[in-house]
Image 1 (tube, rainbow, N blue to C red):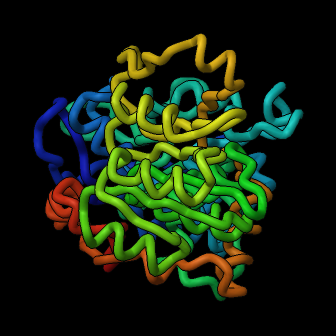
Image 2 (image 1 turned 30 degrees about the horizontal axis):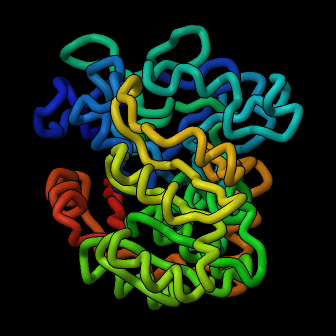
Length: 371
């Protein structure tokens, strides 16, 4: 079948809209009609070459839609099911899934290669085989994905909001709740209030933090953070230090959650020096895979028992945490409507990413059109 999709061919080039050919689902695979896709910064990392992916690639790793057809052996979903796609697949039986760490499932090792198990490429086009970002390629009207990437959700959930729970919401919320282990009464710094950081703010507030310090150079991001749980907001870590010192009587923050668009040594150092004894620094932002973004005084780390923790998907388990977070949305405890700044058609995907890079959007969402 034919599908219209947004493709990156070369690092640094504009995203192109192409009509591609999509194969039928095979063993363990499903055909999904994407209704919505989130504009997340990780796709920019691929488009810009910060993350080295196999190209050409259909971008998009936040997706929601309806299952149209299933291949042999599919048991997790059926035709007609509404699903949110997890950007990390979860097989359920590898070492990491078995011990409750689905966010580092072994199946996730090939998400930047873009093929399904068996090195299968269901998408083809004028340049041969096309990969799909995170084995999903949600910037396409239709996709063939593995059942391990699909999480069934309630039929009455609005998919234009639920789509954000495929990546950005659990990544930020979980970075606070799971990775930083925020506890009631604590002081938390969130550095970078984009699609992930705004949800780290929500997670820290929900976990009971007394002080949630949001740090972002853009006034609109700081304003949104204050709306959704931050108690203070500053343009830079340096500007926040005096307030953090005063709020904690010199003890400093209990945790710093670093969610910038591009991680740098300066951002890591700011978080490290912003936390006190026993403080936790959580890294969620990315840079080039082998870029050295950590340069810190190890003696201070030892003497003050500070910790650095990497966090992927907020240390969440997609099969249980995607429905759980959506339940919190249904109860009003997590806000999704309020973090969506603008919606776009697939043809406007470059416009949407320009807005993201210019800091205009907290979250943008692509609404797919189907004839």
